[in-house]
Amino acid sequence: MSEQHNKKDRELKLVQEELSDQEQIRLEKWRKLRGQGLEVFPHLAEVSHSVFEAVRDFSALSKEELEKDEYRVKVPGRVMTIRKMGRATFFHIADCRSRLQVYLREDQVGPENYRLFDLFDIGDVILVEGRLFRTRTGELTVLAEKFGFLAKSFHPLPEKWHGLQDVELRYRKRYLDLIMNPESSETFIIRSRIVSSLRKFFDDRGFLEVETPMMQVIPGGALARPFKTFHNALGIDLYLRIAPELYLKRLVVGGLEKVYEINRNFRNEGVDSQHNPEFTMLEFYQAYIDYNRLMDLTEELFLHLALEIHGQEEFPYGQATISFRRPWKRLKFLEAIKLYSGLAPARFDDPGALIEFAGTLTPDKKPTSYARALDVIFDKLVKDKIVQPTFIINPPREISPLAKADPAHPDEACRFELIIAGMEIANAFSELTDPFEQRQRFEEQAAMRQTGDEESHLVDLDYVEALEYGLPPTGGEGIGIDRLTMILANRKSIREVILFPLLKPR
Picture (tube, rainbow, N blue to C red):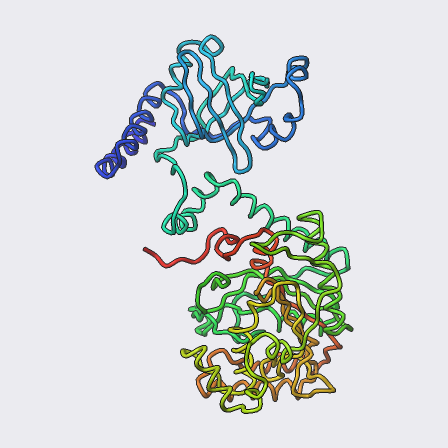
C-alpha cells in the first residue's frame, strides 16, 4: 500500500508545478487525509436515497411531520456550497437533478470530526448520514451525524458559465456541464424518456426491435458521403453506415412485417447547429402500408411523445409555441418552394437559370440538375420558414432513389419530409419494391457519381437481389432523435442534446 501511495506522490509531483494555488491546497488536504489513515476513494457506499430522491420524497412534509416521525437518510452528493459559522456549518450537496442542505454541528459529530471537515472542499463527493428537519427558513435539511469521503476533487469547480468560450467548454467537458447546470441534466433525462417512449409506442403496436450492421460493404439508404475504413483480416474497404434502411427492408422481405431500429449513423458532412457527423435515428418499416398511412402514424406518435414529455399538445420552442394537435398541414414540395422561397413564379420555367441560381446558394457543391436545384432552394430558402409541423410531400423522384413514383405524377416521389421549427425531423417513403426499377435508379445514381456527386447512391446488387424475392408494399420512415430532442427539450443546438458532440481537437 505504501508503494502505491509513493507512486501516486511521484506522479503528482511531476505535475505539481503546473497546479494553481487552489489545486495545490487541495492536493495538500488529500495528503493530510491520507496521513490520518482515511480512505478518500472507497470501494463502496451504503446509501438510502439519492439527493433527488430525498428531495422528492420528503419535500412535502411539514416541520412538525419531520419532527414527529424521525426520517433518517444516508445521502451521497457533491459539495456545492460551504458556509461556516464557528462551531456549525451549513453546506449543500447535489446530484445532477437536485440540491439538499446539510447542517453540521460540532456538538453533534464531535470536535475531532468537525475539524476534519476543514479538509473538505467544494466539489468533493461525500456521504452524509443523519435525520431530516426544517430550518427556521423552512429549508429541508439533514442534521449530520456522520459524514465521509467518496471522492476528492483536485480541481475547483467553475463559478459560472458565460460567453462563447465557456459554451464550448461545456461540450468538451460535459461532466462539468452536468455538475454545474441542472438544466443540462434535464435535457438528457428528456432524451432518455423520448427513447423509452418510442420503444414502448412501437412495441405496443407489434413492431420487433432489431439490429443491423454498422459497418457495411456498400453504404446505402440515404444520399450522403460516408466514412471509410479498412478491415485488415478480410482485406476489404468498409463504410460506417449512413442509414440502416436497406438492411431493414431485407428483413421485411424475409417476413418480419414490422421492424424498427434505434441506430447510430455516420455521415461525413459539416458540423453546425443541426448536424453532427455521428447521430441517432429511429427507422421503422411496416408492410402493406404507404406514405399516407405513415403520416397518420407519425402524427399519432408525436402527439404521444408530447403528452409523455409535456403532458399537453403544445409546448414552447424558443419564441414560438409548437402544437402537435392533429391534423398537420400537408404541402407539396414545389408548392412549398413557390410559397416560401420569395422567387417569382416565372423563374421556375427556366431550368438552366434556376440551376445556376441554386449554385450561388451552395458554391462548394453546385447542383447539376433541376431536381437538385429545387432541393437546394428548399433547404436554403424555404425550410427555416416552416415552424409548425408540416408534411412536405412529393419531392422530385430524382432525389428519392428508394421511393415509389407517384402514379399520377411520375416525376414525383411518394415521399414526405416532416419539417418542424425549420428542421427536417423525419423522412419517409412508400418504398420502391420493383427490383428492375430499383436497379435502374441505382444506375442513374452511379452515373451522377461519375460526374463528381459523392452523395449519390452506390449500386447495391445484393439489395436488388433481395427485392427479386419479393418486397410487399411497405412504408418506411426515419426520425432524427437528436433533432426531435431539440424540439421537445427546447434546445437550439444539436450539441446541447448530444452528450459528447464531435469537436475539433485543441
